[in-house]
Length: 98
Image 1 (cartoon, rainbow, N blue to C red):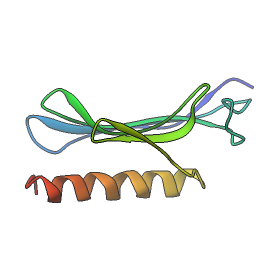
Image 2 (image 1 turned 180 degrees about the vertical axis):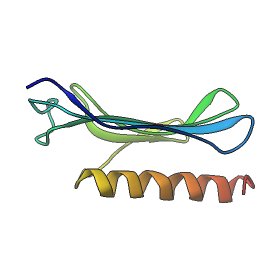
Image 3 (image 1 turned 120 degrees about the horizontal axis):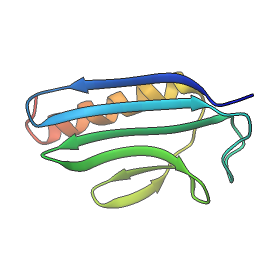
């Protein structure tokens, strides 16, 4: 089985900020994860990533925020997308981008 694209979506919030969400179903988990998904979700403002969720090989599931990396508990794709959207919403509220 080859990797299968589950979602690829880009959402523009304004002229200078957008979110991009890409999720693949993969035939083998990306170590050290045990689930069958590879993902990259980012929120970019003025050309800078301010939020990110991904599962890089060797690092596992994690998120980026405020120039720091934090563990992320992957449950399923629906929860991943909901958590990312909530994080973007919260960042936009905290930074007067609503």
